[in-house]
Length: 449
Image: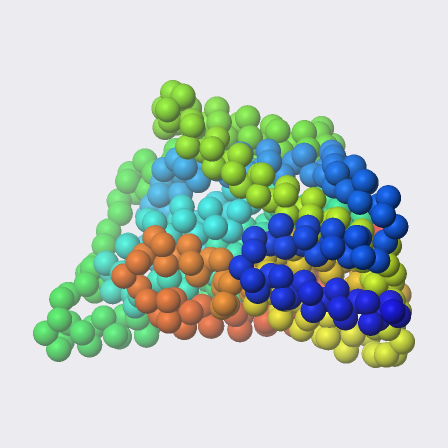
């Protein structure tokens, strides 16, 4: 069989196995092992365990369970609620301040936790009830939290970016820095939409009241004294110290990414022990269990995905596919559009981890040949994968929101996220027109490449 025919068969078999309902890690492992058995030397089967071990025995990947531990420690504490309440107190007089407070709280929590589902759960459990109590429609309340939660894979530390840095063989520190500008851009776009949408939410709440409905708290004038606002600041301060400490350690050259992850996990555990008195074994057990489960799941997916990619490379599937894409002689920007469209389609079915590790061998060589900066592309690809977290059928954040607000229908949640999908698309266009949004900060701090 030709490499392209073999590649087509490889893709079809993968889709069939995944559609069977088999977990992603096992599906990728089964397909890779099957093709090794039928199309590679028999001795290659003896190297499966060695290949998987060597691929995940990476110092860079060591940071993943440590960042997960840091996120779990914060996510299982009342940190999200305290962070949200403090920001809301300071922004309550701003038009749409409640929605903006949720966006900012999601951004800050995402930068500390590095996990989209954890951000949705921690901020949404406090933010959604507060927004609904003040008259915000269920769809908008759910949509703003689901979209804000996606920032967890863009703002550093991001597990998704760690995997991209490994797959693309790029500097993790530079990639983390490149995510800050686009992350801030998305925060501003989301906040601007929340302020714009506030007028409509107020009008709807007012109409409900005039028609004999309940007078929501949104129509009431809520006041926070300066003393109350200042009193809430200590709730945020410890976590800002955590965020700043991790960033200074990483970009000040005091620690490697893996050492920084360990420092962040240790600081998070110390902070929740001091601030929330969470130090007993029975208190610590939930987030340790959560860390072990999520780390094992991710590392198993990573190991099997890399085995899957190894088979693709050995059978010259990835190289032939890359040559075929180059052979189409598409213009630079059309090539990018086709690749991003493919990532969007894959996002219908797969999580970001699998998308990166499965597609990197195919899409990165043509992009490099076309002259694209792979750090910049990593950021753009991450924003596209953010979209995958809030659109069906997989849309992980949609189901997290449905879990914490079961009375909001999935249809309302999906409709509430649609405006934010458009804002993400706008952010991608801006990144294409002004690549310095992503590359400017790393070039300033680490020097131009």
